[in-house]
Image (cartoon, rainbow, N blue to C red; front, side, top):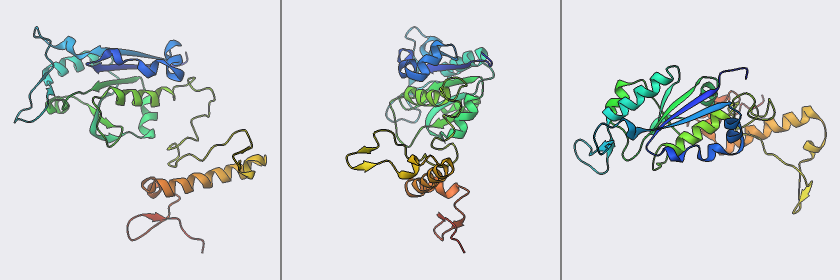
Length: 249
């Protein structure tokens, strides 16, 4: 290998969930090839009472249980000592939205230690006392952080050199250039009366590139105005704050 492998540590109450889907397809093959490694750490191993307690009732009352700062602190410190250069991430609906840019940064690094919450979450004092990055994969709630960790890792692993077959296979995908990806077609040429656009059958690479760029821009404008608003091609802001493409004078 021409680089250090990407090392993932998962702090979880359910280590049996891993590798799960990460053991199949591209990620699984890369794991077998040693391009990345995975260590699922049981949080309960850091409890000190005979019941291996990891949670308690919320201070101030309320439903559910909260993961204890003392137990998590020991687990986090153990993981950080094993991999001090890796960022420590907590999967949380309160976190910053995961972006392709952040995925690329992580994939280029030594790996990540990911804390998976359960119940009502973790004691805030842990987040205040340790350097922990909170990341969200969307505006919805899951039963725990494990599935979010898998999403994050899958996004990173596919960008590790040698994991995807073609060196450029990730460069034209959605979000790589701030746009959604253009539509794709393949054989047969006609299906249920629908044909592949003529330009894609023309063999004219310049025309094909222009068509794909225009299609990506239009899809993004229609389906993700929030992305389009931030794109350099959206030149003029409307009074409502949504940018419009600059009209030819």
